[in-house]
Length: 431
Length: 186
Image (cartoon, each protein chain N blue to C red):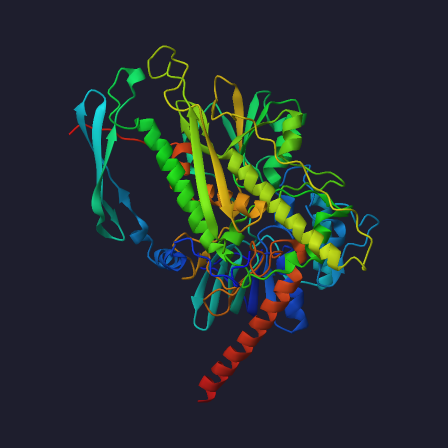
C-alpha cells in the first residue's frame, strides 16, 4: 500500500487513459484500449465486478439469458444457454473476463475526484494521484437508490429499505410490507415477500409489461432479432423520455412471466403510485388504471412489431403462433390510502430506481437537474467518456450485451481524440 | 395513420406547442405559471366567480375577456339553482382538460378527429358533506369518464390517444393526486 507523505497524495502514475470501474463495461473498454495499444489503467473501488457482489438481493438472476451474456471476446460457454445467471455466476463471468483481457486493474482504489488539468485530467484516489489525457467513466448507472422525498416523512416505527439493502424476506419482521415501484425489482420483491407469508401492498406507477417467453422464445431473443435492442439514441423520437423508461417487468426464471395479474392472483394488493403521506396514511394516486392501460397498449405494440417481423422472416425459422395476454386486471376501486400503523405495515421498500454517483466528477458537464450531459457517451468536455448508462447509445447500452458496440464506438472516438491532441501538443512543442 | 398523405387539422397548433416546449426546456423559469380565480358570494349558496388574469412566461397575462361562472346548488338541496354545483365544475375541468389533450395528442400523432365526446359521471355519498357519517368522505368516491371518439385511427391508436391525454393532463393529476391547499383569511 502506498501512503501519502505529509498529507500530500503520492503520484501513482501517468497514463493516456484512466478507466474508472472494473465492471463489464470498464473491462471491455480496457480490452479495446489494449488492442489499440493505448496505455491505460482501470481503477476499481472494490474488487472486479464490484456492483454485482454487493447491493443485490439473494435470489436475483440476470434478466437476460446466458447466450446473451456476452462481451467482446468472451461469452457464456456452459450447458444452459437459455438459463439466467445468479449474481455469483455473473461475478465469476466478469472475473474470467478480467483475466482473459489481462486488464491492468488497481482494485481497492476509490476515485475521490476527477478534474481538468492542462490538456488532460487529474484523478485523485485514496491511493495516490493519476494524470491522464482521457477518462472513461464506467462506474455504473445504479450507484445511488432514488428515493422520493416523501420517504423522510415516514414514521419511525416503519423500517425502510432500498432495493440495495434488501437481501431476503428473513430481514423483515412478520408485519405487512409496502413495496414502492413496479419495474423488475418491485415485482420480484413483491412476489418473493408475499410467498414468504407476509402481506404485500405494491404501489404501481408507469411500468413496462413484458412476457418472459413469446411464441416459444425468450423475449430477449425477439428484442435482439428484431433490432429493437440496437435502436440508436439519435434515431428515437424523444431520447430524454426513452432514457427514463423503467426496466421491464421480467424475472430471470425460465418459462415464467411475472406481471401484475400474477401478483394479484397470489394476493398482493396493487395500488397506484405512492404520492404522499398524511395523518400516518400513505396516499396512492388514482391513476393506476391509466398506468396499467398504457403498459398493456405498449405491450400490444411490441407484440405487433414482433409479429410483423416474424411474418417477414418466416423462412428463417418455424416460430410459435402469435399470443396475446390478458389485460391487466385493475380492481374497480383500488385503495387510495394505507394507514401504516393501524394496518401494521412494518417495512417500506423503495424499488424506485437508481442513479449514478458522480459526486467526485468535478467537470462542468452537468445539466440543471444534475445529470451528466453526454452525446451517446461523449461528454461535452474533451477527452471524457461515460459507459453503461440507460439508452446511452443504444437501447441495450445498460446491459452486459450492450457494452460491445458502445465500447467499439467510443474506443474509436477516444483513439482519434488522443491522436489529435498528441499532434496538437507536438506542434506546440516544435512551434 | 397516413399523416403524410392527408393534411391533418384538429385546430391545434402543434408546431407552436412543440416550439414552446423547446423554449421552456431552455428557460425553465418561464414555465412557472400561476392560475387564478376569484369568487364573490351572492346569496344563499349562489356565488359568482370570475377568471381573467394569470401569470406565465415571466409576466402578467390576461384572457381576452373576463369569464364569469355562476355556482349554486339544485333545488333538491333547497337552493335556487342559479348555476352548476362546484363539484360539477370539477367534472367540467376534468372533461375539458382530457378532451383538449386528446385533440393535441391526435394532432401531434397525425390523427384526424371528426368528433370527440366525453361523458363524465362521479359518485358521491352526501352523508359525508352532511356530516351524517364520519367514515364517508366529502368528495367523489370515484369518477368515470367515457370517451366516444370518431377519428381516422385504429381502436388501439384511439386508446393510446386517450391514455396519453390522461398522462399529460393537469386536471387528471389534480384529482388523482394530493395537493397541499392553504386557505387563509385576509
